[in-house]
Length: 278
Image (cartoon, rainbow, N blue to C red):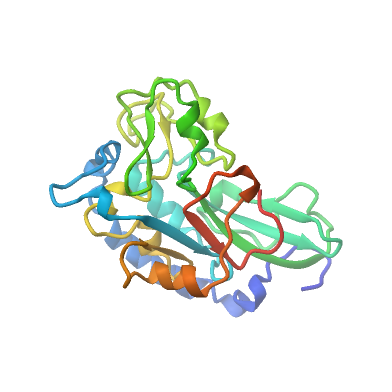
């Protein structure tokens, strides 16, 4: 889309107030989704949360469809409610970015408040004012659950570890809050829990991040962000389950990973991306 400012195109998906309808439907799903977050995340520090769950029998993966995402922010809100993530915009297990491509090829990235409230018509990125826009699209972000995770290798007390099902978890009882994993993550997917009335695991000063809602997936539920998305922009499933839709997406869609040059081997895949994503 050509113009005098970086307004959102979403490749034609956001015309005529289209965002309002799925957002309304998503808000209803959100209210039904988060019922009792108090017992939600304590289980994330253990590989198995129920007697029936065997992590060795699962191989979890995630697909984000940038060509479907409408930037409504319901995923961010659902995640914060489900996992007691602080509402402050700098603390997120998942967030949404808008990538605005200018006519000269520059990519401007903004994510006001992590995208939880949606996005204004014009980009808030530095240098966006007055730029002529070619196109814009939304990119969901979360922990990549790497098969070669730098956060695990830099942790001095083995508080961060990889479960047999591929999910990278944090043992809050072992974490000393040194922040090495926060610095070591090339995707900016970690933060240190601030002090407050509610924290994801009841302990301020420890590292936190997306766990694919481990307390949910080990009980045959979808991650909160996946369940609440009104347009199917997030897909999650078990690569060991032939019937899982995730295998269809990985087989039939043109997927890619972020920062492949890092050698981290992410379990989060993307469709619909243009150019490089940091």
